[in-house]
Length: 136
Image 1 (cartoon, rainbow, N blue to C red):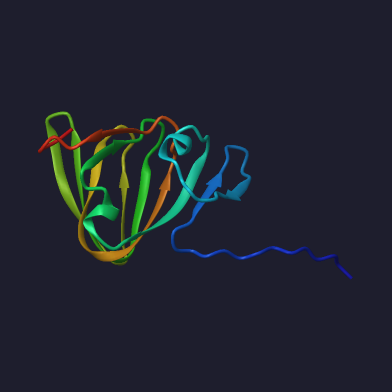
Image 2 (image 1 turned 180 degrees about the horizontal axis):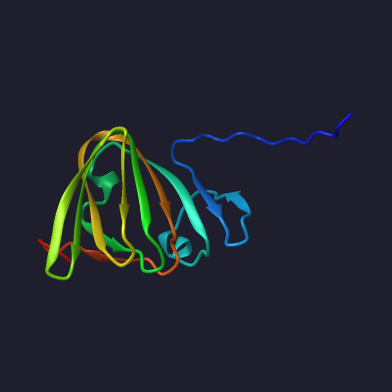
């Protein structure tokens, strides 16, 4: 008979899973500190409940220099503003849709309706800037 081990499940909503560059995966514990996340190697797979504009952090732009970011809107709807130099635009991210934000492109989330966002991100070196009434 094969030996078994205890592999626990975890709550999907509001979780961050770190997959290091060697392929190992571990669930991160709250509180999540952005500065600490930005020092991690590999990728993070995270879910974010978005119930209000404050949860979307629309006042902050961010940019991931080391890799593309994948965003999936599981439920609800967000707008995603992006800016790369003089170029920019906005994408509607409705339930059931996803997008790839290229590395090095500044972007922010804009609240439209409550929902759950799934993100796959390489956090190392992530930069943030406060919104100054326009593009970063």
